[in-house]
Length: 321
Image 1 (tube, rainbow, N blue to C red):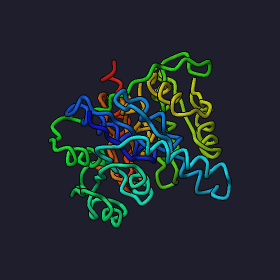
Image 2: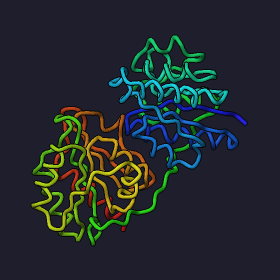
Image 3: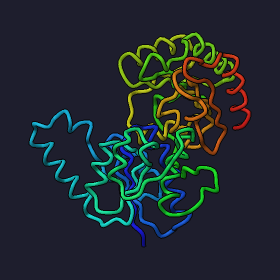
């Protein structure tokens, strides 16, 4: 019974893109036992995959800011104990960073990852036991899948399968009518799509009997969401929610339209009809993937126009009718 550790700690979208690797491994080795190291905030994502035996939380983002606190060192010791509790046959580092290497080296097992031309921090590859050439031009999901295929010697001969499910959320604040999630918030201004386009899209959906739900992640994003919601019939601004609740919120949506954020990719992985809007990244290399209707538009410096997204939304709604 082969034991495998996946090291993919952050960020949210990166963990979503790593999920098909679990499905691939189990398709070729059904008896494999798969553990996964993930940042504490993102633990609910790998936990949704039934093929992940154990998720080991790491708090690197928090620890590095609190290195003078005794609690931090206790937690770091507990993490070391947890990650060294097994002797792994393979440790697959699909992140390719110094911080992921530190975790991989802490664990016991043979480490495999991309070669120095295939990962973000090329020097890391010197410390792998096996390196793999993986073209940067490949979709980010395929790049993760290629690590497993190269390490275990199988071919990637099927579309990516995320295999995660969640039950629809029941909450008083949800719209009483069908709703669409509009992910209009992003971490950088360059990623944003014009507010006028979001307003027009929300008004179109309202005309179809679909309310807009506008999630947010910080005070500025909440303010923008509330400004939009005030102009859209039946629109709601949800409370801040953890990923376990967010999964159930997304699953209940008729449609998700979103910028290049982790939540948009999460929605696609949860098999919701999803339209991705890319304003500051490549809508082909990082396109949204899932088992339902999924389309991505735009690239760095060339955001899609409103008619393009409207047509995709109409097609997505027809696909789920």
